[in-house]
Amino acid sequence: MQLFRARPAISERYAGALVQRPVRRQRRAAPSQIYATAAVEEAQQSGIEPEKYSAFERVSILSEALPYLQKFRDKIVVVKYGGAAMKDPTLKKGVVQDLVLLACVGIKPVLVHGGGPEINTWLNKLGIEAQFKNGLRVTDADTMDVVEMVLGGRVNKGLVTLIQQAGGRAVGLCGKDSGIVRARQMVEKDIGFVGEVTSVSPDLLRTLVRDGYTPVVASVAADEHGQALNVNADIAAGEIAAALKAEKLILMTDVPGVLRDKNDVSTKYSHLDIRQTRELVAEGIIAGGMIPKVECCIRCMAQGVSAAHIIDGRQEHSVLMELLTDQGVGTMLQGSSSSPSLGA
Image (spheres, rainbow, N blue to C red):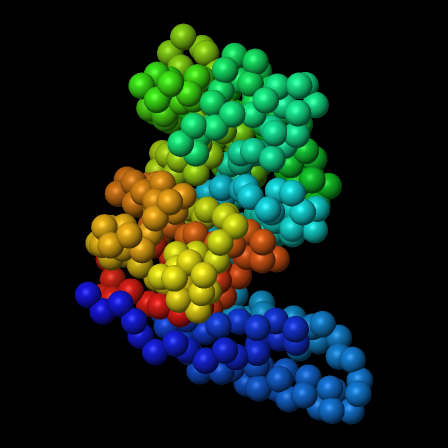
């Protein structure tokens, strides 16, 4: 397997924004890029602070996005939202605006979220110690009450409010509603009310998407007896994407994507297929918390999702940049490819 290819040069597309041109989606610089760069350089040389985006750059952005907008129109895109993007108000606002924009141009987003930091905050306020075992939250009865209250209430309804304030239409749900996500308790791991997804009923989500709403789904499920269970948001998002036959699954994380060297962003893979991904796991290159993420991606693709993306939620508008630009910003996983593309 060919692991490395020449690292592409960094090109400055817009003032103040450095974007690496990955191997997978190269094309010649458009005239708009050349004119925009020349204008920025001229302004800098004359000591004038240029506007962030000129009018010409704005229409150039729309022009580049057109083929992607056409391709993904009326397609479902499931976004798992979590990590730093949930804690930073600026990033949160950007994610919400991205989702509303996608909905306005005919793409159908479904948002699935966790909320670990917010859960910890409320556990501390209530004097309940947060416990973890092998990286998984130990969820006793009291903790489960807090998880359900925080994810299904405060976090979920907060996101719904933000989407509607941005001009979108959203409906807040959790996996328990209409039996969207069913799970079984993972008793063998002795971590309390933590669930493994067993089935997804997508009918309500399909109805909402068809009628122009953005479903916002908290990662709380129920077992066959109605007991609430805390489920991994990545896995819930992947299973929901598979059940909806979504075009794409996007996992927002706190890393730039799959890295060959976790300390070097220039070793990011821009594109991997299933075979290559499994080989990287076997070699120990994909390790730790990245393993369940890529396994989630592989599983949903095996059930019909066209592609899965792992992106850095700390980067503003990373969802739009990954979906609607030639460059992309994260790692795209697909069913097959000739060789992995490595480059930031």
